[in-house]
Image (cartoon, rainbow, N blue to C red; front, side, top):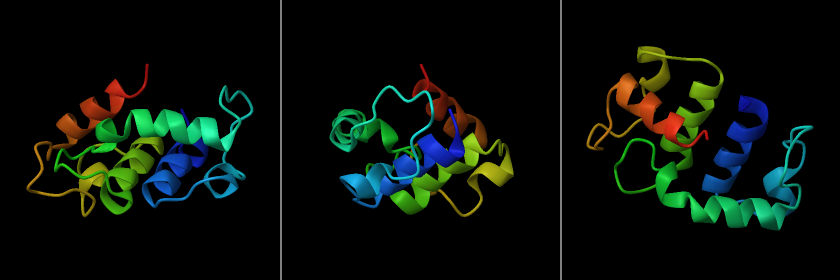
Length: 105
């Protein structure tokens, strides 16, 4: 998993981008889903799981940012500061990191 491919695609998806805008310049060399439509179908299928902070709404500026930070290797306070909804069900770096790991088979 890579921040500049997987993380970027998640943020683009959560911002509502589709088609070529979703994947251009963000597909890794070993990607198994190359078609933007196939990527969107996959992400549509896990959309609810992309609600990383557990507030009921997958959002690019919170959940997408959490995924991106995690994939860049940030942990602890650096992972979550300013990037989660404190009213969500996952508010600690440990809970957020553990949820992100469930998305990484």
